[in-house]
Length: 472
Image (cartoon, rainbow, N blue to C red; front, side, top):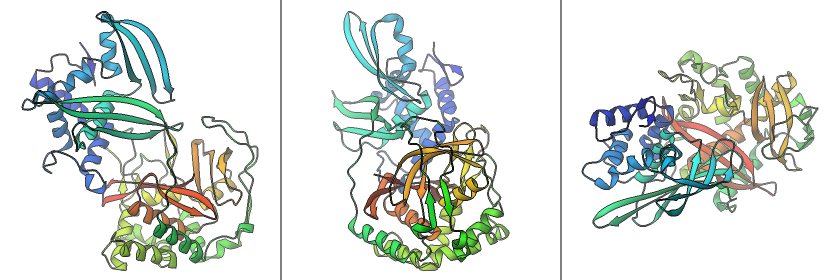
């Protein structure tokens, strides 16, 4: 017998147990997030097979696992729960095999990738299994990956980054065997290989224009940084006795765009705890953001970004219509909370995440990608700077570690000296033209950089989940 998600399931021929199993899966937060990805598939460059547009994600998963019409899928449930397709099922089979050796191939704090050598039925076998993944995660990833397969006999790889420079990789192949389709899958943790930096020439030209036209950019002499101790990749330690910012010429705060951002911060318009519901965006609440929103979207850099998107077919809206659409995109709310089983408080927005920052119990600081917000917190004694991972001598960008009001930011980073309008415009264009992990490539001050951007479902349809820069 095998305990799965709180109940015992052994006879998967029982239709009631199958329904209960799927219902249990569908109630897990991980599976709900997988369902959101499937429902918002039009926002991604992935085509899903068997996409009739009517059935929900959990219905499609049920077809994959328990289809009577396509028996080749029927054995997939066995693969996950009764054979050796995952560490859950591998444990069941241990009494029937002799373990020869265990070798950790890639050791990540979250997931361990282990190679097992064993003797079964007199034959030596090897298998890679992941230790630490949940069954709902494995089935969710498997289903999303399988539904996106377009070509038989070709391997489909579905990957996601995890901490420490690794990424999770699931490889799936669908092939025909005696008139039936067989699905083979493998999961591994791989060391992330650095992709070649590829700049889009037209986008590169836009970035240079944004930098040139950023009239509110801070002069290099106005900010002095003290990087101090260099941290190792997995290190969590305070090795820097002094703050990151040694000095800032606060005369720049008299500029309208910085004054408006400072005013917004002082009003505490956001709840930092992600499990605390944000107020609805009614007229009264919108008034709180009118000043900073107007200064950002009336800037020349934002207008350059709009022209670029319109000229490249990413929007057909007028400027005023696009500005309104971007307000919904940046301020629409969604949930990052994983503590509430029966409700998901809409405690986050893209603007809050990027320009203000958030806290999540158990994971630490989320977002917080604005230099002015960080500086104010450090000046107030709320931030303890630990040390840096990488930075450039021109002090335009760096990644580092710190604690904000007791919450750890393991790896944080943002542009220094750039204006809110520059950051907002660059992140908007990247999220609409080159979304994804480290997908938006460019150079600034002879330094190769990228922006990572992701979108997600929200109360306004689709919103910005995160956007932040990094160094190649």
